[in-house]
Image (tube, rainbow, N blue to C red; front, side):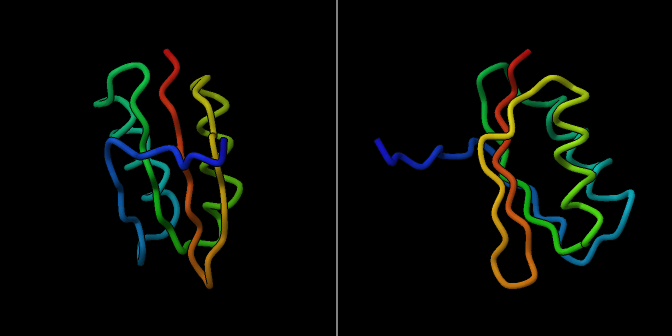
Length: 80
């Protein structure tokens, strides 16, 4: 089972601070087709709460969220 969901697009927000990672994530999600997957990488501490909140508000699916060193990795699937 342990398949990693392969992202269709990657968004690097390292070095950007609120609200930029959320704003750019929203823009990228708008470009995706339903069913596609976006990986977002950010190092802004606010992203840990802001990105999942955005995903929930837009009614998409947060497939995975993990922290590696000082970076957050979000795997988001566009649902609608």
